[in-house]
Image (cartoon, rainbow, N blue to C red):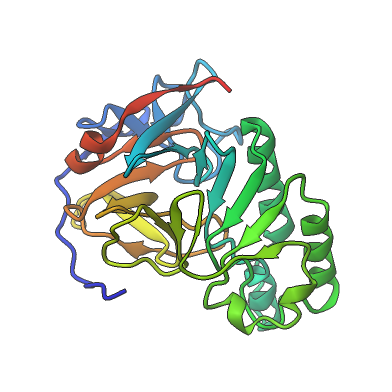
Length: 286
């Protein structure tokens, strides 16, 4: 997909407060220092080590519609289709941290914990199937050695069937066929949804994709600002945020479609396009 690297700066949204950075337009805090009515978690934990969620213990989801298909954008960076009980996830990049360590960069392992985190989301939402929209694995040697055996074991024990639309990283992986999952075709369909790893610029049919690792800039580049992973919806195409804990991101123009911040406890429409697309923005009591 052709993408411009130039971005329009978002409005100055963030105000420093005693509780942390506050987005006046959205009415939420970012990584607050103490419990607040509504927050989005950019870092995984607060200073106290506890995940930041609504102080009433509930989680915020956003429901959107692509064509005639409704999708829930969930905390944890996945999309859920309730009528087929399917979770969609993109860009897990299992083995990336191991690849860095093999090249002398001392980073902690995150692969098996990411698979376990996905399994927890499956259980929470009673999903019956998971579709990975590419780049499940990071490099050609991911499935080699002890880490490869750990990944195979985690996937073989996964609680529901897993389908993979291979991404550019998966295409070079040795022994991909040894994983206990179903390989789905690139640009195929499942239940009326067109599935690709790399997003098209537009689509006549509803499309889900990954690859881009979309992020949004919250604040101004000259002042306080943060990069937030986000869902990006435009022209019938929904691009999911990278699920992997150890991944970077590509900044999406603030005025390009709908941007939905993807926090660990909340999903929040960021711009006017996103707010117009949201069918509901309510508490997730499942």
